[in-house]
Length: 268
Image 1 (cartoon, helix red, strand yellow):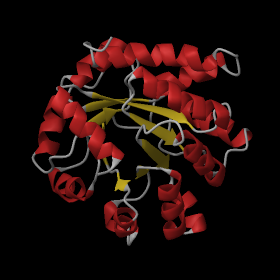
Image 2 (cartoon, rainbow, N blue to C red; image 1 turned 60 degrees about the vertical axis):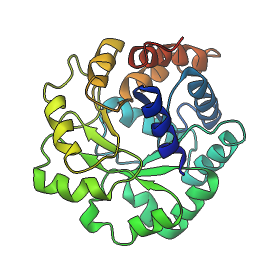
Image 3 (spheres, rainbow, N blue to C red; image 1 turned 180 degrees about the horizontal axis):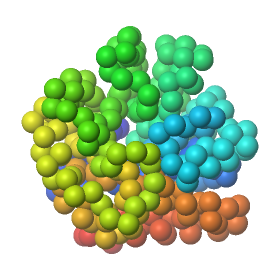
Image 4 (cartoon, rainbow, N blue to C red; image 1 turned 180 degrees about the vertical axis):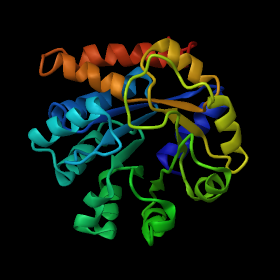
């Protein structure tokens, strides 16, 4: 059983919702990424989503674009990131998903990248710009390696497309609650209840809802409809503001803990 499936099974048995944290890998450096993984695990984060730095992150808003640039500037490459994940695995079994653009897989070959990711301890891959219909051997390579292909569903996705996408995912489905790119928002989307119900007609997988969740109140509201929430830009914004300070990891983790507690109010 994969770490993702095991974690969501545990959450279901406990009657709790999940919390997925996104950070840009290598922002501000890979040692910080390792420390964040361990600290977030202790803070109650259920899945860690690592954005692999890329020069043209078209699905990302400014906050995450700048994080990708900082990751590139710190010398973060896919092989160095996988080595960092292998180091994380010596101390933590937190489920890890790579948030990545297809060019990075294509550059070295899908088979090679997926095998190396599995060996390092990655649990799933979310390829932003790879539609299921064009994925070729991707899904078979992923399942053969024991990895979960994570797919996106958007507010504009029609029912016939949901019926194609939802059954092909593994681990969880990621519902993008807003049109456009990643980024913090003042209010959560109004149609989350309706869309999660539509998705559940086609899959029993947990539904994680992200894009725009910025504070504990929003996290609590979205968790009422979702199986898990995803917070990215708000966390990345904290990293950008604090920078290379000695207390970077504990300060960001304290912010994350507030969000976790909003989703899991019974957690001490």
